[in-house]
Image 1 (cartoon, rainbow, N blue to C red):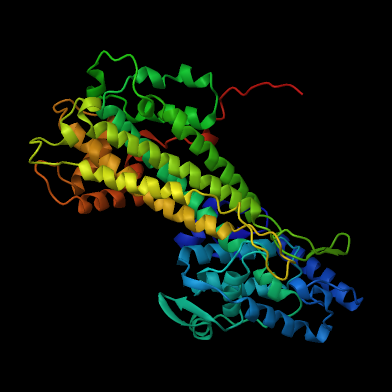
Image 2: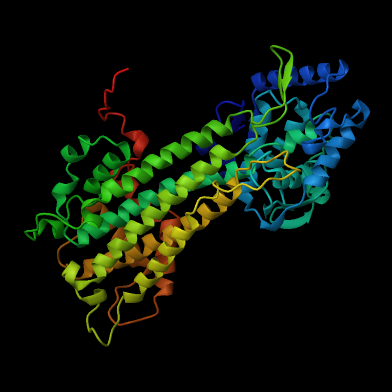
Length: 521
């Protein structure tokens, strides 16, 4: 197997390999033993007539009602049916595959009381390409992603709807074509499949992965702007940043120096002492977004390897606990923070675009085109960037500050984390476009500096952009140009080409050599 789950060591990068790269998944022998011991603990509780939430009682407000052991299997099925109440378009396939992997990893931790066959069924679905139809809306992010995970559970039971090799069909047909035997649920296994945060966590994990690459692309576009506007390079000197030892800030400053290194344009000194804030303070603005990303990665990775379930069974002591590890508040807050961090990346990028288009600030032709009056140049490209930046500001309102009580006030505080994930997904797409517009403007600005050449890395970006977008001489329709460069950003083609030439751009976790403050006890 490519990825082996043990409930403790699943990384974001490994998860992406499964969700997007088709990596196969298995389970560690140590996890199999932990699962068996946890199951034995549950069955011992049932034999001793101990009331166990969701096993020998109802759930939610109905936890006060006892259920006989003979009714437990039917209870598991009915839990899945009653909670499949979502709405909206299907979740993307990579999100669903990630969510299935995360749920399997949680169950593999050996605290959920489910049987090994249940986990094996989920892994078989992942490895053979069965992708449950999970609608995007309906989860409030507490008691887990109940509604979306119930749609996943339906397919594991051989019911519901699914996709197989890109074709929509019944869950029964998808399982049959893939050669996966559905599982018959028993004690706790309805809750075992649905009582966790794994759908919103899957979205958060993929966002964290993509956000790192988006911010790296933003550093490239910023370096192009600084190169084109002949920025005062001294503002990025390592001495400046090491005395303010935030890791993100120092990473950005160092990356910028590497990106525009060797620029003949910047070598042509202007006599300026310093630049405007959006130029001079690029590391101080972008750096905190990198620091935020590290916080988000820590939250996501911790949750990915947590027992996010209820109830929990502990074989070492023979005890079970009904508690609240399914609550998604931590994920919701982290993703709301990421929304803000990504929005600020776009904020800065749009300000860079503005400086290049304004001749008073740039010293370049109006809107980066000759023939003013007859030509409007790249003027309205900034309008698009401004519109997306404004939209991001609205989307950055935190979802996690809201809560609506459900289940007759049994579930009277909820995280709304799934809404944060959907907002952040849209913000990330907007940021890609805003960065593309900055790159388009910077590439056009380079035309007016010829024959002086940009830096080694910024020249790589320029040359790749020129393969898909020609220099602007007379006005033309701009949206195909914007989309062509956005594709370069979204595919990381420019980033990959630059990193293959100058080495990986650094992020906050790479800055381990920075001095840290000694604050004492």
